[in-house]
Length: 400
Image (spheres, rainbow, N blue to C red):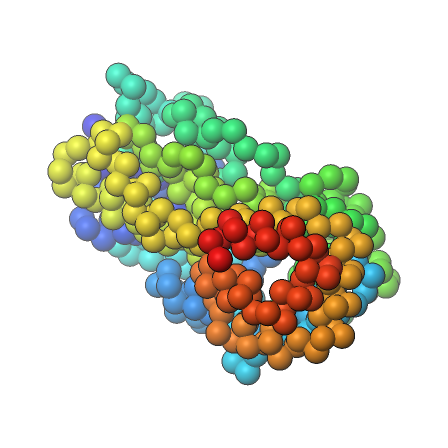
């Protein structure tokens, strides 16, 4: 038998799981299909201050490019709601550098990293996963941690991928311009980003990361159009494309000999598509269950189901609330969105929203969603724009 654990994919979730397992003295081999960790990067690169601490990473200039204090949110017809806090709420990061930092921590814990090795298929024996293989190579392990990303090819082999909606298509580019470095921007509207939104994230005083995700249309053409409307003739880098998952966790994230983490498990915020923090936290739980299984000499499906139980107990309410909000957002037309912004502005609810954000959490959103749905003035504005039935359904789904 080869390693104690084989981790497929050197993204944040795979690396955090690998570090957790290796730190307990078990042998861990990480396989990464690309020649460099973190490259290519498809991420918008906005991570909450609290979230980075939660996954055990100190914010340093090694990968932190900027800090932001709030955001400006734009309706389809151009109305703006500005929400600003007194303290930094998020780090703008260089994802390649952050991923390399996480890789260094895993290696320091004793893990081995192999670059340029793509896992093409799982190795099965008596219904249990015992390794993986690819072009000209084969690796066996007592447990496989699948951190392959959104494709879920290997997860499907293990019978864990399940059915899901088609992922959103996302694109990012860097635009050279001068901008307020303390604020991000979010732009809604079917013309801009059908089914999702566009974002503007300042990395420095003269450079911003601009991107969007969409359920339909050509995302590159949509991005070109948005950049032209927002920044005029400003030059920008070639777009980088990737998939954005917003459908929440898959039904099962473990089976005999295998655990799914990160995008492969659907551990991504349905509201924003961000997966570094919640995906990383769930991956740490996967690492803990893996070490228990290795210590017990039991890699059966029933033993590894403790992973599903752990992350659902800790983070299940967060995923459920965000999925509920995503379901409502998917049904809101541009006209209704415009009406909500208009009602919000006329009611002078900026301070209410700022208070919710100041006491809220970018990653653990269940609490702030519930507080917002319990705020009478905010609900009055929401009803005028979104409709009473939609809000009643939302409140019912989160048991308010």
